Image 1 (cartoon, rainbow, N blue to C red):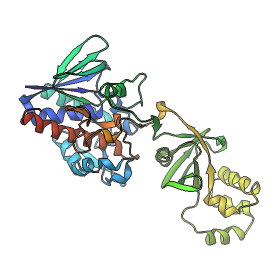
Image 2 (cartoon, helix red, strand yellow):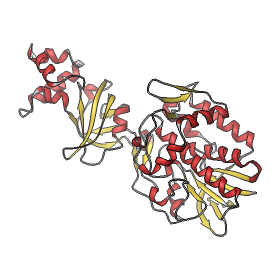
Image 3 (cartoon, one colour):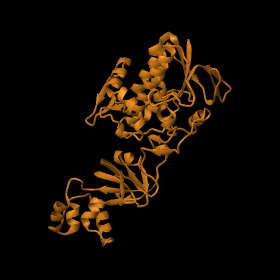
Image 4 (cartoon, helix red, strand yellow):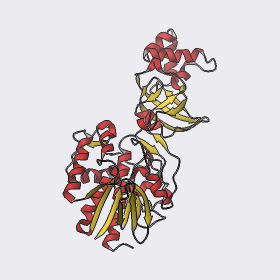
Length: 384
């Protein structure tokens, strides 16, 4: 019997441990190593507690890395739905194609994982991994001087979000891997402009991320104005493209052309007409910007409401980590390390992040699935 240690009891680690044990049954001993006193804690807060598992509109376009195309092409939303259904979880789909547990409770997903862990007899060990050494096998050390001697290691330690201390990247670096710069993403943005007068206001807009007059990204949806910045799904997606010296341009009236707006506004006092287009406080803000900028007309400010982010709201408010172990150090088909045989990296520990809408959890499942297929193939043919 071969031994596989999965380090990290989050989404990717739980999926991997269950799927691998189901595939190999008595041919493998799966050991799930988790430093927290309970596995799956972070699942409970995903998707505002609803756990957006995946999205019918699956495409590599929604990710920062084209190299994961093979993984998401082979682990489809349909396979995601059927796998969870087989494990005892019904899925519902909303009008945007987002997939949720039918209960719309993240706790239902965790309950299914815990039940399967118990049914399959997967060993769960409270284990704060501190170091990995590759000899004939792998030696995984903990801070409490525990030791696991295993044939295969799967690193599924997640990212920086929702933790007070994190060494997952260092475990990969022990085996020669590098790590790209890390940032919180899918997170609200603080702006140079005070937005206190607009705080609590929700608007459906088109939003562009601009750097040196070049559009890096554009999307359409809802934003939420906060005292110090901008939130809402659209702003969270924009945060994936935010860097120093980038700005946000909000089109407050994306459904109307310049000529239509000009005709409407010129028919009466500008202030009164703006009040018929925008909420009062936002109308006043646009009018103020217009009066302070003689180079542009009022229509311009309706289509280009500029904000200048200075920082994010931090990891404590983020959904995902941007950065991690580069994909060029991992086989994109199997997610096996290109530096160390039988060492796999899956989920958020990698430099892969996706848009809001279930894409990040789908990558957790997809990368775990790919690793399981490869590990099972090796074990059935005897590991080399």
